[in-house]
Image (cartoon, rainbow, N blue to C red; front, side, top):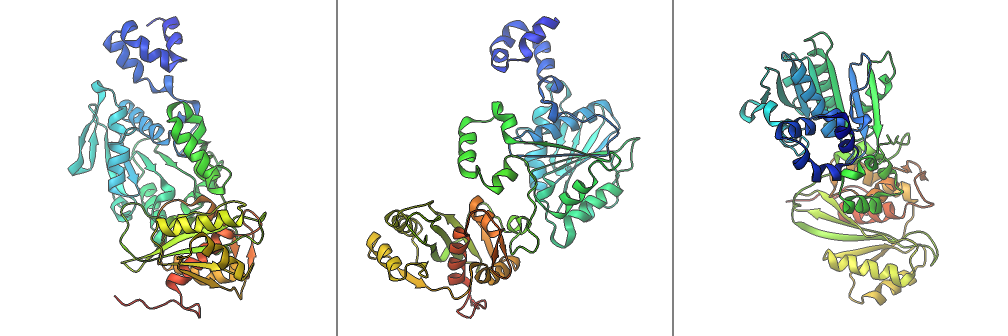
Length: 443
């Protein structure tokens, strides 16, 4: 293809889609679409230099998976003796994302160079002879013994690090990286302040061993649905979690905080929820009509004896009528058994406002004898014991939880942890007795 025709196409993907069938024969078209360096952003291409680990730490939707898969394809096509480890948080994710996903190895490989995928053997074999094996980070010992020349590790911040499992997996991988002249690892991840990520970050720039690429979701805006961009910006914009999940910033935990980002990640779950035996709406009303947010958090106790944070229905700077209506709507939507509202500020007025919104509201008013952070300590202990989970991402609530410190200090966003306090009231009602000790639930 002539240079002017190539230049005409490379700067306009929409023009490409309409022009390729007419301008190129099938072989040219296939070769052009498979030329990753032509279409990739500079941040998705391997850095220069003699690096051992390339850490791509960027926001969701940045194109990390595509960058990792294309690097593996490049290695396999250039080095026919390559032995590549593909490591994800589970074998399911290694298969569904790294191998079979929309940006995985099978999808990015052109037809004439497409490898043979053998799911039963957890193996991918390229026509030239290079091979990749799939591993789960949850099975660290599986990497003790096998040798590799290269590795792609996906979402390392998500790897389960219970009792140092993630770090053992990484160490076993490194100890087996002894084939070839220049073994290398690509690690792709959304940033989270977990020990393995912190360890790699500490090695960045240390003799060039670890090279870091950072990036945000919006860098790949042209290839993401407009609805997705609008939704995540609305939901997470202006939050610490948004800076982490979208902008790719590693958010440090406050020393001694009752909740940490890593703790909350271990408590997060997806999928079908169990039945709820009891649902509570916790409410932290604003002190005045022009005050802070009204914290409204819905929590439920599952049939498995584990509590879930189900929804954050908090409203910003509401009138009394508006926040009372929001409480009533949350209680109705979740078929709540009870609404627990703090009455320190406003006393009987809080009850009157809520009953005006719905006279049948199952309401209990509570009076705080200790500060917000002090009340939160036994609830934080429930998280650490694995007795509370988050059924989704609750950015603003989680920012506030991570700002609570022992002894009653709050150093999170805003003047007051309204959402966190509402969550604490709901979980206290579900899981703790009046003395602050865990209740004993008998199945």
